[in-house]
Length: 212
Image (cartoon, rainbow, N blue to C red; front, side, top):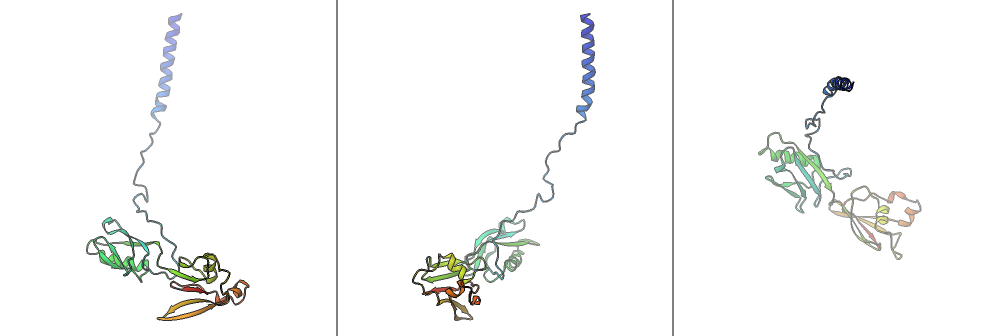
């Protein structure tokens, strides 16, 4: 009797394995990850600064020059005081006065001697050339970056406001236009009272706000 039970048990086990075996064999193996997915080979571009309307490159701006598939011609550069940048192989390239798109075309033309069908991109990483100046009776006089649109009142607020003895009704914005200095009067008292708001002008790079 014991021998018969052993034979039946062995036959049952073998039958069960036969049923399980095909199911396990039919389970598909996971495919290995592939690098051929769309976009896998796309070159990642660095994040750039938000550019104000009408922006052109100026001294001290930080640029990222990327020539597609040519690392030898690509670099992060700072625009020199003479208005030029230095790039590998291309040496000195004029940058000041150009938009990023225009400078990319200049780089592409200069790179033709080394690369066929060169494709360049210029990304502005930092804007350091656009500055305004505040002098006189304010909490923190000095030079300040003008990276976005800013009016006179906003600038005064950003430097900590006026000092107690400031002449609030006779603040001057000094601006150079066509080689000549222009003086624009700003009455702080009127503006904060909501009067004559047109004098609260948008500042331009190079403006000096004089508080006496």
